[in-house]
Image (cartoon, rainbow, N blue to C red; front, side):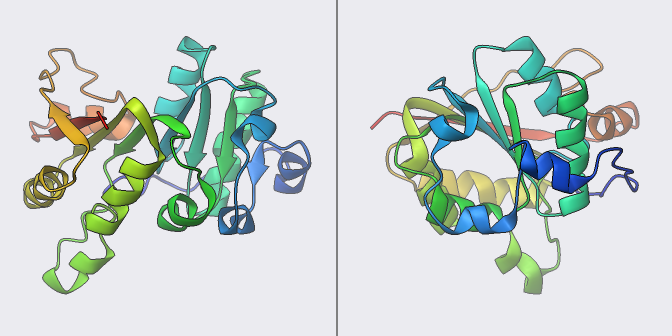
Length: 217
């Protein structure tokens, strides 16, 4: 989820219809094993995005990579429904949305070595010290990331909050089985991810911090 929630969204399709079509999963789907092959109707590799916002990144990437499947995890149901509706209208058959808590999904629903790539862009930094425990990137969750990634699978994190990024680096440094990669600094106006949120703050001179890591064992 971006550090600043985008404006309200209007879903053109009834979310119940999106659920019936299998494009949108309800929160309870995160409570038990999730069969990704059955969900997508094939066994293609799966990429997961946590906090897709209005779907700019995941929809563009799904269009560019039709050989991959994409599962986007969004806590707020109207946003999950909005992105699922956009995917349906764009004819993207390789996108699914789930309205759920990401930590719950990873702990309870995703199988070992079931995800090829994970994208976490602009997670809420919870800047107040008393709220740091609410941050997504912490040791128990990174251990789950390691568990669900396939060997050779990759996780990418981008944030605009320098102190949070320092914590992210420390947590990944201490996770066995993950090795960090050098992340090139983007040279174009789209930045790392290309969302409107990122473009706006890049134009204003704000700095961004990125980390990528691969599971090697």
